[in-house]
Structures are given as structure tokens and as C-alpha cells.
Image (tube, rainbow, N blue to C red):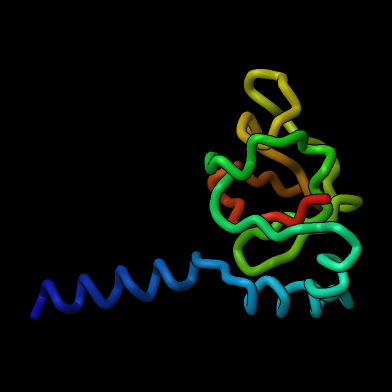
Length: 113
């Protein structure tokens, strides 16, 4: 019984961190944006954390970053720190938005152009 409760808690916590197309579109709609419109204009949705192979690209191509149930627009990002200083998303250490710092582990996905 204890193992079952631990498994249920793990599944629920993992689901809370997961991001899929529908969730990304819902977060964008809260910002008066549409995933379909962005994709029609040449953007693409990348899901997962920044250590994935899809994130070996320059950070200046990022249009939207998804973190903890929020879509952060590029213009809202105050600063980005990289280690080493390559400017590539795979080397992102942290970024600051509205005075709050996020690390690359907080990133659930991004829209890039």
C-alpha cells in the first residue's frame, strides 16, 4: 500500500511538470497568442529540458520559454547567463524575469524561430 501511494504521488508530480502541445497552447492563449499562428509564421515548439538535442541552438532564436505553468515571452527576459558563455541554450545557467531567477532545470519547453 505504501508503494502504491508513493507511485501515485510520483505520477501526479511528474504530470504537473510535463508540458505537451495542448498545455503549451493553453499557456499561450493566456498571453493572447496561438501556437498554430506562431507555427504558421515559422516558429516551432520544442518540448523538454534544455539539455536535449533540440536545444543546441542560439538563445536569440527563442520567442517563448515555458516554465512551471507559465509562458514567458522573449521581451520579458531581463538577462540570461550562460556557462560557458556560448549563447547556446544548452549552456544556459539561469535567466531573470520580473526580478525572479529561473534555471535551465525550470524550463519545460520553448518556442524558437
